[in-house]
Length: 195
Image (cartoon, rainbow, N blue to C red; front, side, top):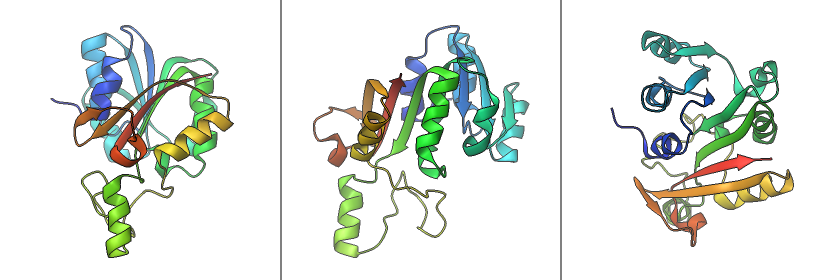
């Protein structure tokens, strides 16, 4: 099974044998890849009970939980990596969730759709409507996204909170692109963070 491009980047950059918490793990695709290919001790937290059941059916360790509330239950540095993929923009307090990720994980991977991508900007400029794209596939009234974060916004947030960006990857379609003008050109961003 092929991983989504942001998850493939994360999987390639997790050290073998690491302890990993995948927050918003979905059906467990990343956890399964980490377990099978990197011998990682991968655990998951997912808000949707159907996805938790899918993880358990794959032999994965996953619990039902809410990133806004339940990360506080984990002890400091319980994991080598905490992962939040395509979930940051759905949390009520992304700033607090980032703090929790870096409290429970020595490092954190965060990926999110970039709402400053040129197609999003054009949709708003020419059509005057919130866009529906491959990465933002539902209408504004159906979306779980409650924060419209851009790469520029995210960089400002982590700088203000004293968080170090160790690496960043930017995707246009399914391909990595250069960092130049990423806020305009990238549809999706992946950051590796530490304190």
